[in-house]
Image 1 (cartoon, rainbow, N blue to C red):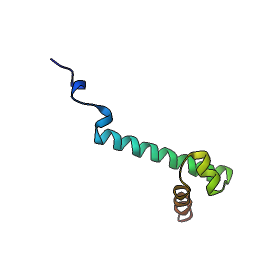
Image 2: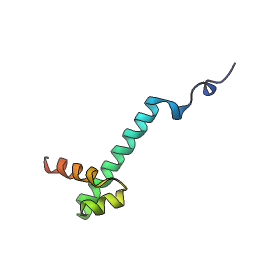
Image 3: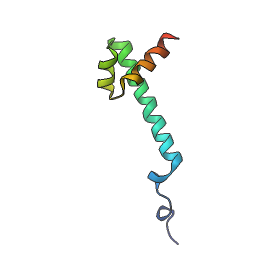
Image 4: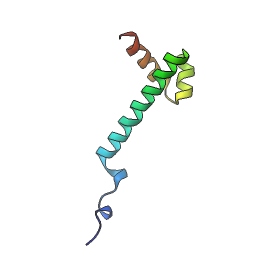
Length: 67
């Protein structure tokens, strides 16, 4: 009997990739938010350190302003 791994490749699985993407985005969100709150960095500095787009940081800052 062949192993399921010969038929199933984790890197090709849509749901696995989706969860991985969502986890990475959530972690990036947490990092950027912490940099903004704790260090009061600019959007550009936060984006550079967190390795995300400036637009992503601006979105987070806007969400924080609404709360």
